[in-house]
Each structure stands twice: as C-alpha cells, then as structure tokens.
Image 1 (cartoon, helix red, strand yellow):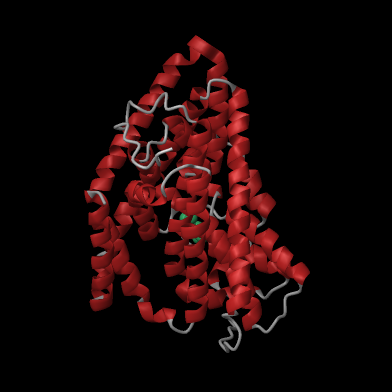
Image 2 (cartoon, rainbow, N blue to C red):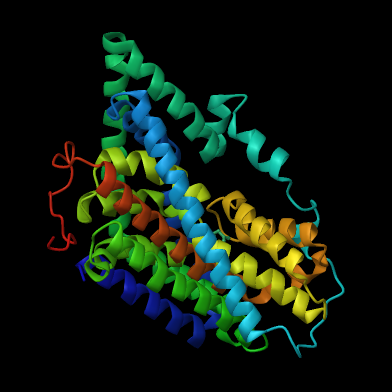
Length: 413
Ligand code: ASP
C-alpha cells in the first residue's frame, strides 16, 4: 500500500470515529469536505476536454475510434448484465422486504420534479447547444461529445491543427499536475467528508433496513470481488490484488466523495501513473465510463426496486422482473457520476414496472452510505474496463512520458 492510500484510509477511519464520537461538531468539518470535492470538480471539465481530444487524435485513424468504442460498449453491457442479474438473484433469495412493515405516505423531495425521462433528460442533452455553457455547467457527456468531434477534426486537419493540439496537450499535463497537488490534501478532505457524513446520519440509521443494506452490500461486493476480478484476471491478464492496490487512491476517493465524476481526475492519474494504462486508453475510456458505466448502481437499482415491491407486498411476475432488468440497466447508464444519482433514476425503474414511487422514501435514510459503496464499485468497474481495453488495444507507445513505466500488476504470462 503506498503512502497516499494509507493516509486516505487513516482519514476514512478517523472520520468515522470522529463522526460517531462528536456528531454535532462535525458541521464545522463539512466545509472542509466540500472544499475538497470542489477542488476535484474544478479539474473535471478542462481535464475531460483535453483528455478526449488528445485521446481521439492519438488513436491515429477514425476506424480505431469505432473499434475501441465498440469494445467499450461491449464491456459496459457485459458487466452491467452481470451486475443486474447478481442483484436480482440476491434480492429474490434474501427477500429483504418481506415482513417489513415500514410504509411511507409522504412523497420524497427528489420526486418533486418528476422522474427523469431517458430521452429528454439523458439522451438529448448529450448534444450541447452551446459548448461553453456545457463546459461551464460541467455537462460531462456533452463535453465528451464535442471533444470526440474536435479530436476527429484535428486528426484530419494535419498541420493546421497542430498549435491547438499542443495547447490541449499542455492543458492535460497541467490538469494532471494539479490533480497531484489536490491528492496531497486528500486525506484531510476525506477525513472531513466521512466525519460530516457519519455525524449527519450516524450508523444507527442502517438498523431498520438492515437486510436491505446487507443485500445491496453483498451484491456490490460480489460483483467487485468476483465478477470484476475474474474479468480482470481472465481477460485483462492482471492479478487482481496488485491492481487493486495500485488503483486504491481512486477507490477510496470514490468511497468518500460518492461521485465517480469527481473522482475522475484521481482515477485517471492512478491508472496512468501506477497501473501502467496508456494515456491513449485512459483518456478515451475513462471520461465516458465515469458517466455511463455504473455497475454498483446497476446492482443497487435491481435490489432496491424488488425490495420496494416486497415491502408493499406486490408480487412481481417474471415479465415484470425482466422489465426491472432492462430498466435497471438503463437507470445505471442514465445515472451520472454524482452523489445520489442512482436514487433519482430509481424513479424510472419504479415507474416502468408500475411500482409506487413513494417507495423511494424508504431508501432515503440509508442511501448516502450505500452510495459510497456503489460509487467505489462503479469506479473499480471503470478501472477494470481500462485494463481490459489496454490489454487488447494498448501498445504502450505513450506510456513512458508521464508515468514511471511501472507496470505493477501484470501477471507473469
Ligand atoms: N454516486 C454514484 C456515482 O457517482 C451514482 C449513484 O448514485 O449510484 O457513480
């Protein structure tokens, strides 16, 4: 374990301890945690734009873009399918909602805007009407869309595009360096985040929903430890433990921030510098993945939807379970990498299956804590995907310049 990871872990443990011991005082720590998340978010838009544009240009020709895109899509679909099936299996076996008598009558606040619509709220905004606005609002998918087009145009422009490409390349290097500085204060930020989180909700909120919490954690844990590690080993040809060790700063940051998007700079930095992933693969794969590849969220959507049905005593037919499967996949893709996004897209699943939307209120008390675990799983899924893509596409050409060339976790072949 490197020094940074050790310090972040100490920050997490100390934060939990302080949150439990002095819950009221943790309000003073909250601004420090918020400050850390703001620092991370500050990096996202410029990092993504520079990474995507230089990533696309470094692919060389546009057929490679299509091929890598196809592989990434196949990876998202495969792991998403495993994740949802895993969640469905566990929730049907454990039946956490049966015999639970907590019923809710108020409509949760997050539903006041109504459930999000896949076409209007998720798909259409991918094409920005104003690029600068997309940057200003941190609309990641829109930035990616524009970045891919810009990269494609720069690759065909040749010499005339060189100056701009140089600027974006420099911008990327600058963002990576700032990420390192931000990571130096991560242990303090993580400590403050954990303390204020535990201080605000406490661990005792977990008790009434204990079986539900266990089902989600088991599902997310199995997906990470079994499915993703097997894929990493068999397809990515890397030993899981050293790999996990090398990406651990990203996993712990995801856990503390509950946001894959905010963690993106760290994920990028650790994958390139410590896990031997090339810039080419990382810059192409990670921005998109941090937004749409959400395995932990997929497990959670399936478990939570069936849990709500069980609490309300609604028997789900096989056809309805298939519907849960399909919409849970869509909801995990539609959930952007921000805190509680999965809770909001949950409404899509419930509406499609015909379950009461008020059921979401049941999940609220424990959601923040579950969000931490599913976000860590989401980010781990992104890292494993990058390792697999690296194995099939990477050629290590641009590996040397910013990483120390340490391929820590390649198994002997
Ligand atoms: N917070 C998660 C993420 O950032 C999304 C979710 O709410 O499930 O990946």
